[in-house]
Image 1 (cartoon, one colour):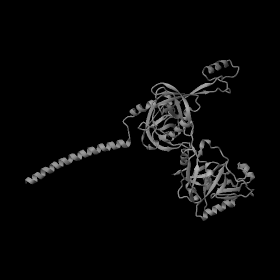
Image 2 (image 1 turned 45 degrees about the vertical axis):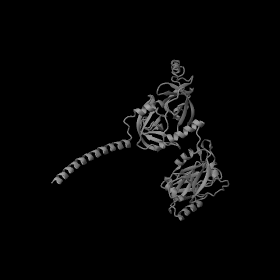
Image 3 (image 1 turned 180 degrees about the horizontal axis):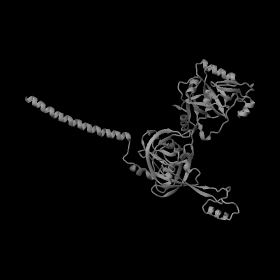
Image 4 (image 1 turned 90 degrees about the vertical axis):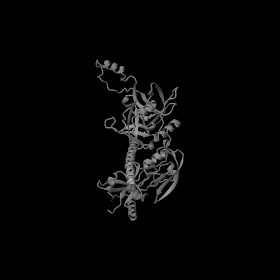
Length: 493
């Protein structure tokens, strides 16, 4: 009995200890869950500390442009009217008369990136400005000089002279930003002065219209006047330059775009060093590889950049040919044309790089020494030197009415003398060819990556594709001199 009571007493005590331990564990787990949840959200209690930290480096920009007066303005009142002198004097007093230039002002934003006074903003903020004035958060203004601009990324670098070191902000790694991360935008929206807005990274890698676009999309409020201002991460680093908004009414609807800092820093470094950009240039015209084009060429995947033309330049000297698919550039796989353009542009001018191309069913490696894009000139596309006259013949294939080029057609279509090919006379609107964009006036110069001069040549290429078990044949089509590849089905008609 004594042992039983002792055992019973110990068990009761154990139950109490166990309950207490469970409660303690639950409390600890709740605290850990809250901590993990807060870390996952990254939600700050306030943005005030961050705003206080970075505000001194954010600036308002006022530009002044002298607009020359025009002399072809229509008079407000008829000549000889008794009110003519009155209206002329009124317009002159308000700077709107035709007798002298007038001054136009615009507002934008920017941020200081070094204590010696370098400032980053958008090119469109200062484009055409005769005077640029910088207003600082803590008071005072300074005149700025333009260091350099890059319209392709809409970035400009300014410089001010200050007796004291200026507060500045560092760039961060935009590639480390994740969709859902908190961000803060600063600037001068609608001319209201220094203003802060917050939101999240809505998406990355957005492209608007430029070849080098890499925008961060955010729902932080961005309005007119915010252009050129910084987009901060929660560490106070600039991960984007606020550039554009998508809006039906000109105001923020939560779709804003900031040029990614990893693009901006390369541009800024070149503008500071050279006063201009120096991008690598490969010297080819390219298009994306679509699934049907990949099938027609025997590629396992629709990736890479398909070369449509090779004018005089680095690639021609290295042996790259029209119809090659660039699979790898300088050790990096190429997904599509946009990626290739950006990678080449970010590569040092004069660097010799290895390029892997897919040609005739196998890969080849070529060495290309890059030129400079800014110095590249428009080069006339090569044409065959000895094109013979073809007897007029018209035929229907794959929904196309085709006729070999003759001198009359070359003149009508603006085709260089000596160029061989098949002119598209008519396109059946119910055909695959029409769906894929072929139109009357187009010229087919290659099929199956071989030149064609007659309808019989094209038929031979189609037959070869069928015999090889392919579902499509690849056509090289030119329109007003611009080339592109189109894959059309080769099923029996």
